[in-house]
Image 1 (cartoon, one colour):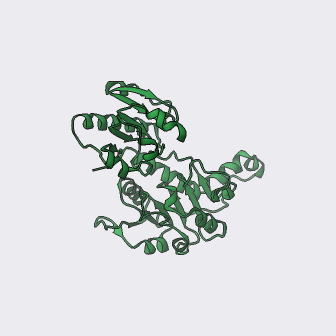
Image 2 (spheres, helix red, strand yellow):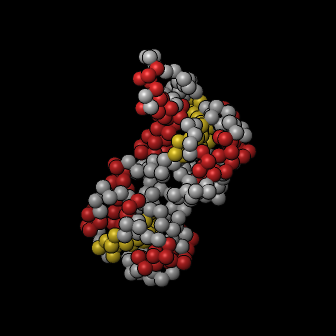
Image 3 (cartoon, helix red, strand yellow):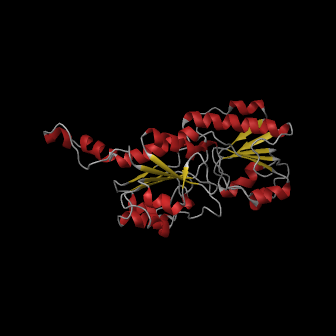
Length: 316
């Protein structure tokens, strides 16, 4: 069984792909440009990918292809509807990055809430040494305990974030289209009005595209911090950048973007010098343990498919 790995760099060079040889004959490409995808798929039986986009234009000639394994939970980069017409199975991986993304969610939020970057720069610049003062307390920061944390999306990651926020002493509000009785679920508008931190953990689909736009941002406290570790297009990025610039929200932490990497004319480019904005390069999912786990999970998906199982199939 021939396995084409289309973008191994997205999994990381520190993760050994040796286990793939136990289930097939892998051909590994560090990256696949759009005009290379068709040839890289070639006569593969299985394709493994993370960010590469697959659709009719590059799948039409893949006559041997039987299974697509996405090294992620989200699979909006694969045209599943077309795959169904071709009888090509599509699998994702669920739950592998829960701890990693939850940890990065709090890293982004706490960096903003404690002004960590500003304090770090104060010390490293030599200003602390030259100040003659034992401490520096400005800009002032507040404890997270007693604040309200709004969790938008209650999947594995959202629930983990809610758990950690409660451990910090937060009241946790949640927005879920089908309310969960184990959480204080409220309408999105209520969550946005009352929360001091809002973190986004929903998949990208027709109902979540620009879920947070100008109207929603106008409901938020001007001190509230917005964290997006979901997908870039869950927010209207131009509206988010404008809200931060105008002081209508208090801080912004982002790991995901509508275009990745984002171009020089992206709305967030104007925010890069600001201390109230923190950006990471779509790596919240990518703790080493999570990347090892995602490979192991894809191998199990392949084994299940070969034996007639439906493990993690999203096309059924």
